[in-house]
Image (cartoon, rainbow, N blue to C red; front, top):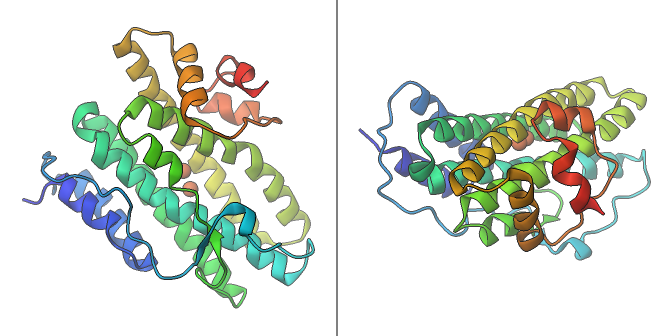
Length: 263
Ligand SMILES: [Fe+2]
Ligand SMILES: [Fe+2]
């Protein structure tokens, strides 16, 4: 039987977006059905495979989105969201494949579940882009989204602190604002996609928090101060309010965690 690590590695090294979604969802399904054996016999790649397009640019080189409400701005919005979800597939796969052996079966199940969710999010957004006459890859995209993964590749607690508990939690803060705008613009299919993503992301942050608490317990440290230290060390940006306190709390992130770091 194929090892779970081999299947995860193969999905990470799949460049074509549609094929990567297929590989991520297939890996999650095979794991759930007991068709992959618990063995970590291959290393995860430093960088996952990327398609030729989109062109990846430094954030300060990204072209302006165009006037709010314009067709160009709408496409740019959905394109940037699709790119975030595309990278999120690899972030979840890498989490499971790199740290799964040390963290256990529930951890692997949780993050393969996340990988399958992200693949679905990406597919919905790519379809949305096609309905607007565009496609994923048509515009340049943010080239820095893998950085947080790379800089935390040796430390699962740091990875959990930064990726689900800072970056994905940030999504909980900003998605309702986008959802409101999209709804106000009368884009009902777009609104449906965003509400589904928001619901799923609460669960993703929740998985991150749950396993981070596990790490803190093992280390014998108070979770909130351990989290703050790791965020200060590994995350270069600022934690910016306003926070979506209710969604964060639903994911197990209480204000004690992020209040102080935000100041
Ligand atoms: Fe997502
Ligand atoms: Fe997510």
